[in-house]
Image 1: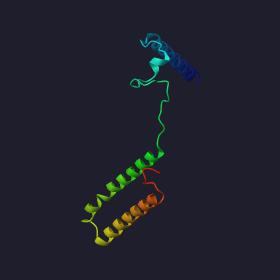
Image 2: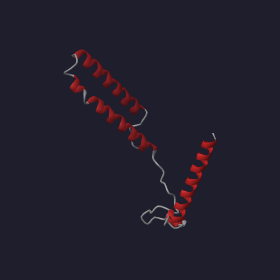
Image 3: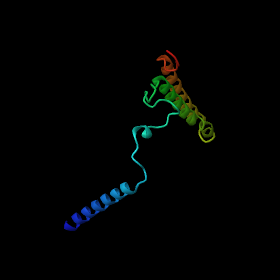
Length: 117
């Protein structure tokens, strides 16, 4: 127990000394608030930093990603046609496409596909 406490104190002391030496030897001068702000191509950095984000654009992007992933799932279905029976392939393919159509109808019904309101 005693050896563990001494080791812990030594580690803390060495870490503290290293941090202090790095702060003393660093070449970065203390900068003012104008130098620490990001460069904004000539715009006044004292104005509003962020523009309001359109939630509708975000929802359209999420819908696009979902349908993009669904296309990735549909493409290998043609390869599985050779290795499976026609009945199972038609059943799984038609069920997947029915689910996609139901999702598209749901989004259309609630106006998610309209760009402007």
